[in-house]
Length: 179
Image (cartoon, rainbow, N blue to C red):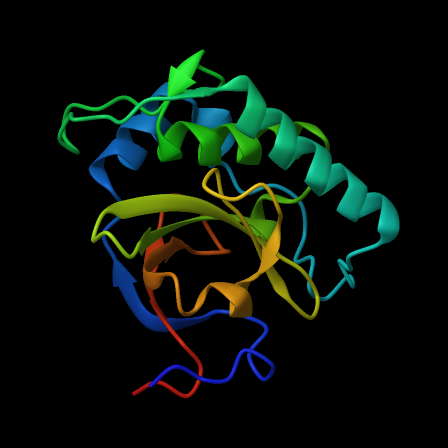
């Protein structure tokens, strides 16, 4: 059962680890700096959504969505390459490029979590979740606007997400109130 959107503002994770996508493991070998833990625990330091931060997130989201030409990848997980800022790419390239650009701008790695979802068509899809003090936001190449995670519950089946402690480790996602 999906909880009401007005009640849920953040994603919850099972304690059990979950395997990362194979492409992500290969990505971390190619771009080790993007897979390091950076900065301190932002939730304890009140990493809030200020007007300036919202403008910055909107700018990165829309710029990356415009800059990369969409192309569906037919490669399997073992052979596909996840690339930062390719001229053409799929959802994975959009998500990691947004994460990379926000890391460069100084956002903590613990606030920028890649997450795998399943969309209505049944396809697996990668998005970027920005964890704030009181809310999680979703940056997605299929939508121009940044949305609160609660607004995606009817569109996505949440599968797995990077852990805040280490981007190389992933965990299963569960919705609050779900069994």
